[in-house]
Length: 285
Image 1 (spheres, rainbow, N blue to C red):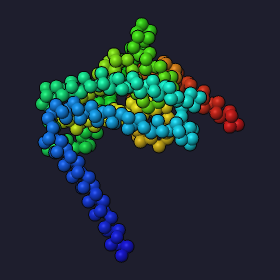
Image 2 (tube, rainbow, N blue to C red):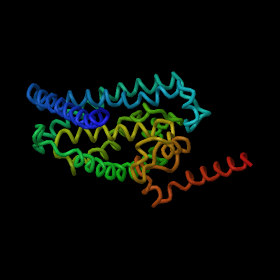
Image 3 (cartoon, rainbow, N blue to C red):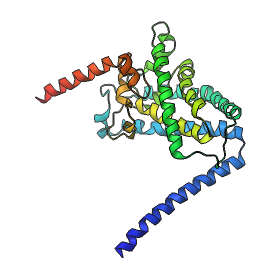
Image 4 (cartoon, rainbow, N blue to C red):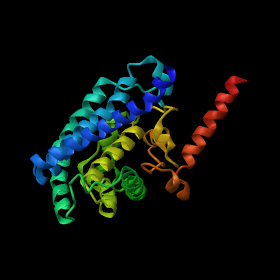
């Protein structure tokens, strides 16, 4: 009896997976059959971005109400306030309407110019999409490092990038809190990878989702040990970027740590945590 039950488990699992894939296929075919390419590329993309952004922000928002998460907060002496969250939310909503909306209209024309397929049959394999997303992260990180560092130049910092640094102790929603010019300048890094790798609408959506997960994670304000994002080689994470908000100088990369290592712009970060570790060891003794 036990053997028959165990032998049935893989069958049930395979059936469940097949049902999930079949449901996705049906939903995708229904979408492409009942909506125009313009509606899919603009309205659907905008809705997906909006829902994904606030959905991914939810954990870091809830963490402030969970006492056991306090030990993972990086800047514990600077708690998140309702006033700061409301201030951030207002600008984010305005950005979604006035900055993001035109971007998705542009995405439609990009799809048309490149004759990008939307059909289910032309959809690439999942591992191809993930490889393309990793390539996009590398491209975006390179662009972000040099443009972000340039935005910190004393001649222009106070006019553009200073807005993002209104929050010295960031929280997830701060990820897209920025001056419109900064949104466009740094946002171009997201587009370069699309120009190189885009071969289907599903890639654009997965890449958008991956990029949101990354940028919201590094702004979360929490350094969680069991974070699957840390499986990515050379991933900086919240601890790395949080120091940038606290220090204003160094750690300019968005995702990886290599550009900061190459140019030595992570030296203050390394010195700070080395000193912090030494102080903790003294306390233990």
